[in-house]
Length: 258
Image (cartoon, rainbow, N blue to C red; front, side, top):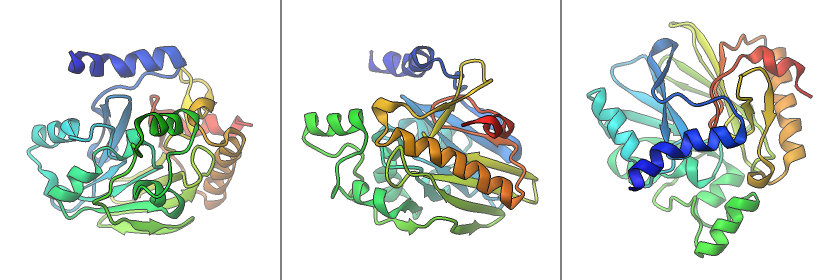
């Protein structure tokens, strides 16, 4: 029964929110695959060396069943995961971290403010995540076995053929981070804004983060504008913008966002 509910969760949520639907196992250049996990999505990015992959976020399921299925279908295992980059510390983005940490030598990267949520020192931010923590008497985003690496604004992380640029995007949570991912060998630039934004159901408009899920909606709006302007100033041509809760969109759509 629960599996059927899980399969319906994302189509239901995207319909209610009127955001561009997520496609499970959506493929992007260079063998990149985004796959769904209950209410959210995560992305596996090949590093360009052997069978190593990097994950953007770790999904919602604490048993990491969708990650296991993804790895099995591609004849990989948890040891192939060399890094996990967390956009923010909400439970639907940190769920698989304990399993990944116990089954691999993966390094987890997260911002300093959100690392305190991951360690259980701080309650999840945003009206609904905070309420869920309160009602359950625990921090649902905590992954206590993980000792993460702290990332900072504008930090560059190089992993084999991949280059990750960290862009601070506070608002959804204090420590929300966007990632620009580049691979010059394969030839792509992708932007992962986490939950800071979504694309509308026809993909023709940028929507700000959900107020009921967001700690500071106005700050989140300003962070979208700031991240866009910084990417423009850097002269990086983004091929796809890949939010966590809607289908992908063009970076051009961000140019008119206010």
